Image (cartoon, rainbow, N blue to C red; front, side, top):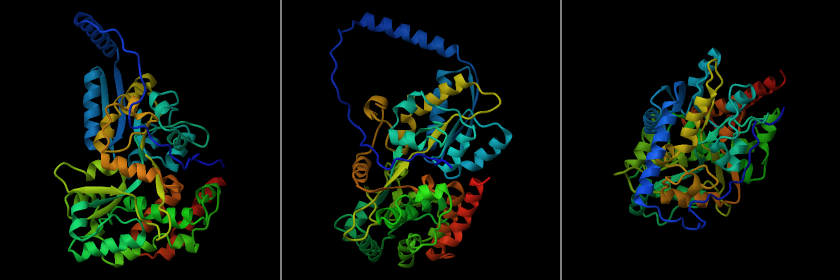
Amino acid sequence: MKKVLAIGLVLCLMLMTLTGCQQPAPAATVSDTAAVTDTATTADAAAAASVSGELNVALAADIAPDSVTEWTKMFNKDYPDVKLNVALEDASSYEVTIEPLIAAGELPDVLGIGCTDWFATLADKGYFLDVSGTPGWNAQLDVLKQMYTSSTGVHFAVANGVETELLFYNIDQFEQAGVKSVPTNWQEFLDCCQKLKDAGFQPLAVAGASPNNLGHSFVSFGIAQEIVASGFDPSWNTKARDGEYDFSTPEWQSILDKTVVLRDAGYFQRGYESADLYECMRAVSAGEVAMTIQGSYQTGNILVDGGANIGITTVPWNEPGEAQVGIVIAGDGYAMGKNSNNNVDLATKFFNYVTFDNAYVYQNMSGTIPPWIDSAADMPNAIVNEKLKSAWDASNALTIKSLEPQQAFTAIVYEQVKQFVQAVILGSAEPSQIGDYLNPAQQEYLATLNK
């Protein structure tokens, strides 16, 4: 079987400042400017008035919920004769919304999706339109194009950002606890947690009731350190996609050992067992917990007006003397679904509206990193927090990078990964049982290849 995703492991540095020179144009008079403006406004209004129809769209509303409201309001104003039917998705479980629509043959005209094997397979099966040639597809980083290309070559989505995993920490609590500098390796991280605990702070916020969140952090850096950086099996994801793979090795068993160390030392916040992802981040932004490991796309939910004084740094999961490892993530994206009433021209208009023309709406609310090759030119309205920019640059400069699990595992195996991580966090499973969870799922995946 061909590999589901052609995945690049090295991100290019993003251009965050505008460069280049142009010859100055002749100065326009007030009357010239007014005439041009009036003509353009009239032409735009006439073009908008000629656009009519009905669209069904489904957009994720948990990371930056106001972006959906803003886009809808803007689009309705610009195209008043278009009826826009908006459904909301949960980004941690897109399948809940999408699976029934697939069964009914009524995928939305435009929908939010994740960069996973499940969606790439849907593209191969013909459920998504190819978005090649759209301005968002052409403008996004090559690594994102690779991640959103299916095994049969369908270019099925435009990303809403390029991401990594980072450590968010309370600067003031660090100072009060006597933590002189951010931890740069695992032992320093443990020492930092203990100092915070001794000073009366809750060191680390984790979402025990959200296995998907835990899969994004602990498993990510477990794989990065124990599988990729160790040299044990850097191409494991390719092998797992091509057929049978054994997750029972000591290296795989050690992936969650550090998580158990943190849990048993009492470094998780009180009530972590029932905390969901957004309660976890709220607690950090409110100053109730000192640290959390989250995707850079959650910056807007952690650095909030009136919130705690938060710093951002790379994640110190590496042993002393070993280099830190970065995580590569394509942000969630937007696709165009095939359905029984496809109005491709109108759907493309809305698709371009949210993925390129007004992509800054989501970008600024989520606090993510823009996905463009030339951000200054393609998203001049982008606002990127300086703390995030600095941490992003540090992460991007790391020599070794690993994939984020949901973009490396097959869909069948990743569902078991989420259940396993949650079971370990809650104490109902041990890291040594990873093969008991993942190997049956891998065998189920293998059976699908042989059909």
